[in-house]
Picture 1 (tube, helix red, strand yellow):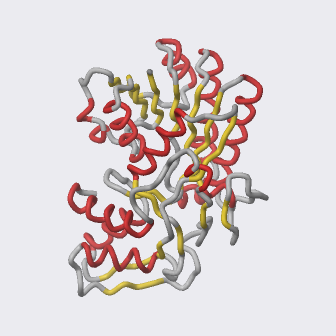
Picture 2 (tube, helix red, strand yellow; picture 1 turned 90 degrees about the vertical axis):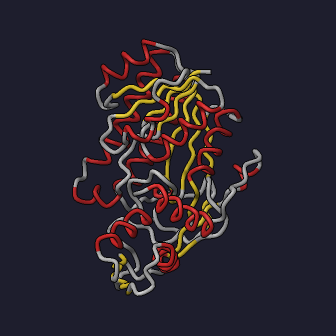
Length: 314
């Protein structure tokens, strides 16, 4: 099998490359290194069955040339803007990095004959909802440009699946944590503590409550759905058991960083930024029916990820 991982030098993508190469899958990693980092895949460079290419997916000609060079059995599309807040100040950012990158990949697949796509999506496509979110939950009313662009990308994937036969699996992630993270709440808290050890400012009132998932559990889900497609277009939800509040996370980070004298200062708003969804919960029974079980619960994932980030640097 030959796999292409788009965004393969990023946080989740690099862990996926590790798993695929370790499983004997010939793995091509594509990244423009704007958010991804070469050091994330440096240990794979030169290994048989691994190929790294620095490619900007928005450059359609380069992408089509790549697909013309070799045939891929499966394409994992993980390239995206991972900073939801940044999209608030630049309305075109998520359009380019989330939606247009997807269109370029789909067009290259259509032209080359590649017919298997696994697409990384998000809970942000739903917007705010008090319901347990199952895969067909509606209506979908995203409140961030990130969520809107991912929803648009899902729609394009559906069109290409049903019109051109590109078998597609959507995997909607929750908040993913682990080593090699370059963004996210744990990364932000640890960076803040490194700068001001006695003071940790938290965006929002700390009552935001979400499920967190360790990166290895996400990778296991991606590899499972790669082999378990039941129809032309499927969606799955992945999440650790339970959820964790921002207040709990702040306390876990302070404790793990050895900063008992740190004062945690919370904001007044019920969310961290414009477009932030303060709480949601996933129904993961569909993915569980395939045999998937996360190794870590939500809070255990946070604790383990903090330890790994402190051990490996952030």
